[in-house]
Image (cartoon, rainbow, N blue to C red; front, side, top):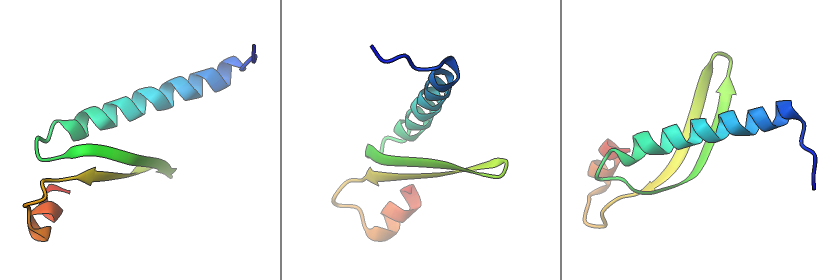
Length: 68
């Protein structure tokens, strides 16, 4: 079995919790379907978050951009 240092386990745990919270917030919008390709990075004291989403196929591009 691989022995992962405690510090590294903690980083993975915190990142997993962070990702779950982000996906939970995204899923609160009923117009958003299938959030995927989530990417996060830290920029100074802020975070940049990118995510791909799907919307209803009958939405216009303008409507989809409002959702995004």
